Length: 296
Image (cartoon, rainbow, N blue to C red):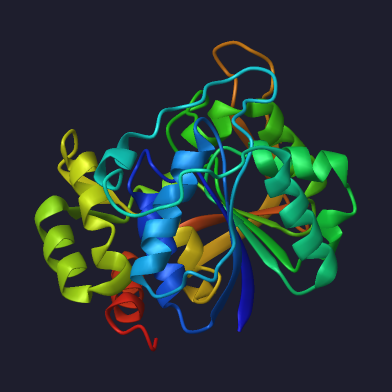
C-alpha cells in the first residue's frame, strides 16, 4: 500500500474528480486524507465527500484549506458544486489552517512513508512547507500536476502554477530532492471526447460514475476531457507510463507577463524531476482497468 495525501482544487476542471475516483479505486492506495485549496474550499470539500461516499469510503478525512492566493494571483469559483448541491453532504466544513495542521500531523506521524499528491494551486503546500521546512524531508515523494516545461514557447504557463505563484515558488524551493512535476506539455496528450467519457464512466459505476454529474457541468463548455490530474495520480502506482528528466524548476513570482512561468533547466542530478513523455494508450488502459474493477 502507498499512503497518499491528496491536495486538490476539485470543482473547476473535472479532472480533479476523475483523479480522486482513481485513487479510491486503486487497491494499492491508502488515501490518508484529502485537503482542498483555493476559493470556496468548503464547497470543494463537499465534492470530495460525495465521491468518497459513492465509493463507500466515508471514513477518509477531508479538510477545507486556504482560499489563497498568498499574495497575488487568482482564486476561481466552484462551478461543479451545482451538480451536488441537492445531494446529502456536510455544509459546515471549517476552512483555513486546520487543513495544514492535518497535513503536518499526518506527515510527521509517518516519516518517510507518505506521498503528497497536489493537483491544484499550491497555496496549502507552499504555506505548509514555508511554515515547517522539515516536512518535505519527511515525505517519501511529492508529485505535482503543475507547470509547463518543454513546449509552447518561452512564455507558456500552466494554470496551477499561475494562480498562486508565490506558493508555487515556495513548494519548489522546499521540495528539492523529492519532487516530480507532471506538466501540461505531457498531460495535454491524454484526451478523450465527451461521448466515450460518458459511456466508460457510467459503465465503471462507483466513484467514477459519481463524477458524471460534475462532468456534465464541464461539458457545458467543452467537448472533451483532458486527464491532467489522473495522469499524475497514476504515476504513483505505474511510473513506467512516463519518461522523466532531472533538472531545476525556477518559478517566476513577480507580477507581469511571465508570472507563474516554470522555467526549466535540465541537468544531471538536478533537485527536481519532470515527466517528458507519456504512453497514452498504456495510461488509458491502466486508468480504466483500475476504475472498472475496484478490487484493482
